[in-house]
Length: 405
Image 1 (tube, rainbow, N blue to C red):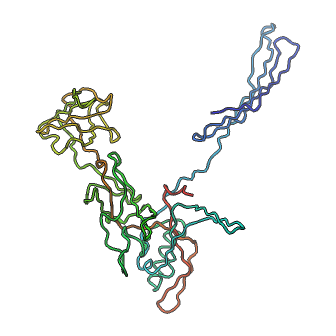
Image 2: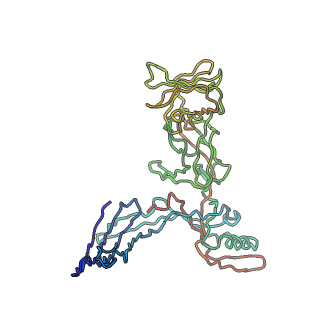
Image 3: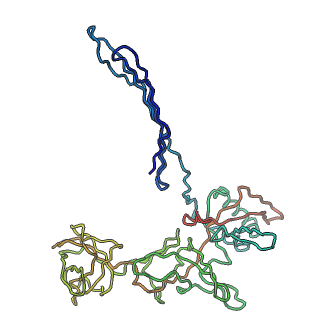
């Protein structure tokens, strides 16, 4: 933090009478600038005024009393606008019978500067495009018109976002067959989400759009999967030990083995030539059956805080007794304190898959959109036939995309 004293001022008046010196004004002005990561506080003014006056006590001159007549400080704390993205979205799906016949568009925003020679320089403002839809083409009946009006009123025009199924592109698959009439059924092998590193348990759903040659591709994050449609693969086989956040498009693997409320447990350090820091957890026979050497575990419920771990702690199973009664662990340095006969202990396998496996997924998804107008023009052209004009929807970005430019 840097501090700048921008002004310093003092004024005094001396009078002939003893003890009558008066400091009438002292003044300082300073500005303190903090780092960009901290709130900025500017001390703009500090001021004090003191009068020291002579008083008479039983006719004798006294050194006097000091009277603080004025003191104040002005502090300016500028307020920076909070650009945190507000999740103003209602989990309602736009009527499918209207979206089915609507027109969609994929839009980027690119600045192009062309010079006299004819050459141009191009800069894209967005890493990901925004989808746009004109749903006026999907309104064919009076029932559809009434449904559109009701939806527009509930969303209060442009205020609230909602979910839209893009009939052309709403699955993890791509049509590849000649004269395909629809995209293939989804499979857990459709999209590759990443390769496991042994630590990460959460992965973002994505869809890759390759060129016909396969030499180039663009990856699209999927934030709003259709509930109940996500299927996941790990290392080429389908798995079920995962959860899905339907508001962010993240899948999280969950532990495939765990026991809680274990009784009479003990933990102590042991000496192993092949393991620098080794500890052993002991329980009843069969307690740890199902775990294997190389598994990462998490344990807690111990009285000593040093024995409790988190998913960020690297604790690996070095060996397991044949009867499943003991678990020998490779732990970080300075881990653990000896403890015996502890009840309520929990041990579970780390939810992150072992390193080196490819994570894949298949899914259906929605596009979060909002109306791009606060005015909804409609008409009744013929008996029983409704019509709407120029009703645009535009995709909204989630929080992680709010600052993309």
